[in-house]
Image (cartoon, rainbow, N blue to C red; front, side):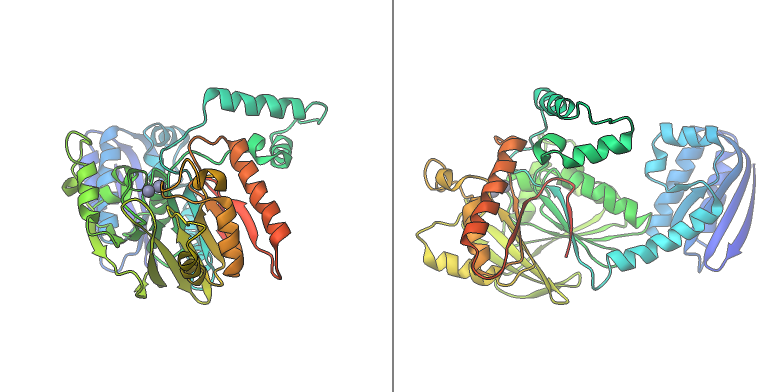
Length: 443
Ligand SMILES: [Zn+2]
Ligand SMILES: [Zn+2]
């Protein structure tokens, strides 16, 4: 095994030749760690074109290198692997942790352009909202029967459509009603707001947080991130994703958990205590801190002006209003709005006022929310439309879908809300949608 290096500005390309196995991995690992520590280096690209074999010892050395690179905020990538070596990376899933590129040029440009692209997409002016979990109360995966029903309906609708390529099949699926060609998904509450540089802003830690954490790490590409997590409240469906939130296990990652409940830290610790979970919260390697914030006050966090508002819900829940550069998103889940309570309505109209997007708990129909499910702490599509119209909101996203509702029912509730908006519209139009897991909205 031989190592040679070339320097391009702050990028170091390390070319490796030979086998990296039990005998040579230690030497390779030591050299790699030494190079990562070199002053002024921001990126390391490993040129693996000359590597004919890697054993698990090599993969372990790379993981140690990745860990150190993250701690020192050095970007890290591998390029030009021979097909067999690449296959070993794929089989062991190391390629999901370390970015791998076909050529050295791609690795160098991609690391640079992905940072530049992030500046554009996630920069100061643009704002995007990504829904990672939109289900309320309990994760609700599709059943086999539900999947088969979708497939059967799609197959029947596709008769005579000449669907002989994957692309044609995809565009045909796009044309179908969403409850046939798509699904709202089954993960519980987690929403991401775009943030600049190494910041990540997440709202709630439902089961959707698992994928949100993985995607954030992929974007960070080895750098340390600053995670800002805002908690509506501490019910199970809003914290259950945290034990599976990978960034919390990585040394060097910083996680700030904000909320208005005095029991917040306790609730997070309790769900990871024996016998409920094998890893105690104190064993998570990231730097985790809990920050109490006061409702009604404006806080400056991760480039946003944030204010919280108490919402009616068993054990209390809080809504958050986020503002940045003239754009505004309100996250208002787990809230009951009683039709007879005018004061409550007026306060929420003020809280939602002129927002570009309101993310709203529409778990039940209005009939259920004022009868059998009264005082259960949730609201409806009808109340969402009414409050947002009066607050002159531009877009309303219905979330916290009832796990008892299938895709067709959620789509119907959304259509009902659209129709209601149409027949009660005053001067400006309110756009209404039902959010699904994976939806991204640009604002
Ligand atoms: Zn909930
Ligand atoms: Zn709740």
